[in-house]
Image 1 (cartoon, rainbow over the protein chains, first blue to last red):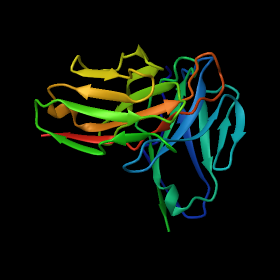
Image 2: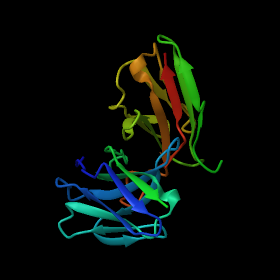
Image 3: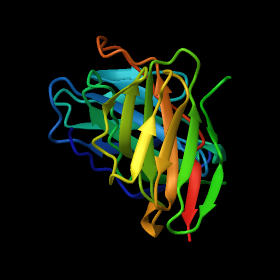
Image 4: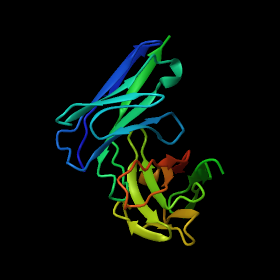
Length: 111
Length: 118
């Protein structure tokens, strides 16, 4: 499974757009890119998943360049409740969906 | 129920005691996973079930760790002779989880059991 690198922490203010970039230089052809969010004392929660180009859902967008060696999670107009740890995961989702988490990015949203 | 539930939410054990942690997955979910999350770290995979079959236990740290899912629904993670390094949050996740598909197969996590070994 490909190793991922993401910033340890980021700070933002309410109403701003936040972009968290993840590097995955060794991504394989079959690998999908998935992002999870985790609040204190809770399990991780699925945010978004993509394979290439751009994916958008009701909470976020995921931008993936053509070489797929990185990806960017975009959170529009963050609020205080978006303060959490965000994990980028890369793996072949056919193989039993075993997830390999990194250390994650701590996002702090300030008022 | 609406989501994955785990019990107990908190467990304190003396070193050397055995503990059993329970996971109730979402009804109908085929796949079930256990993860261990140390303080300040991301979750680490322990083991994976598809129905009652344990297909991957490569993440179990030692033979003191044992997991079962005898009827393909509820699962129990048992830790024998607990050590201080076992202190962590143990997360359970479930998914619809058929290997045959490439489609998104979201894992739904429970709130975890925080184990403290004194």
